[in-house]
Length: 326
Image (cartoon, rainbow, N blue to C red):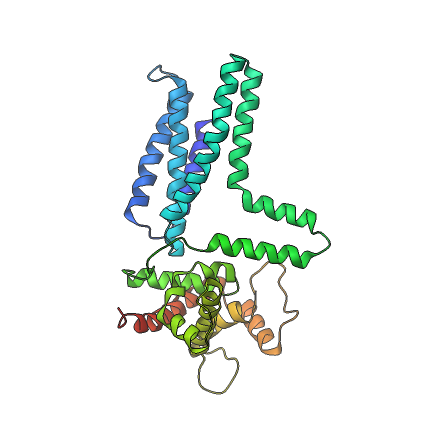
């Protein structure tokens, strides 16, 4: 059981968190949680009488929670976002639900005595209450699809609003303060990858760029998260367009076109050359040329490397406008 369940699960978690450069605390979480999780499993599988089985089971659950925190921190680090405020809000909401329903569970157990059926029902009710709190957004989406089945547009709009609200970062300071060059490059690369997803661009630290402030002021737009995300998308589009060679053509396959092609066609033009069952249907003539070129002549790994290099160029340009202001 330990070999079949614990080892693959831990391996997947460690790979997920550590496949990219992570801050030191995450690595510490992973090492400590892995050791104690393995020890807890061993105690449960091989009852040596060292600790009560209930305590060993509780300790194993704590280790799983620690691994979950490490994965969440790693994901937030990869996105360039802060996590503490979001985690504290979620923790407070879950504790409130657990206290309200858990208090009733304790009263029910005190009244029912050793009735195992009643205990199962009460603890199931507590688990459902916590699950509803944690899965509020997906459940709301499901109810929208059921209630507004005749109006798919309304359901999609409500889903977009929920995803945007969930993506809004809970932060009080400037997320770019103290950000080193490599982190800035990684955040820029991720923002380029989210070019077509406004809800994810809302949460990007790049929405705090001084260039965004200048763009909002120049057109008299309100300083709102969605406006900042739209301006970030426009700013990225301008920087991508700046990579285009000045030879007057719309498409080329020479080395000087690589940075532009690797970002413009997959992200701006919507060319999905490597997607399963992808076709060139609906693309304009230039995008069709790019699709054919990518499919027949460019390995996916090469495109990924070109995108990383192009993101570094754009990040350097954006950071050059940021550093003097600091």
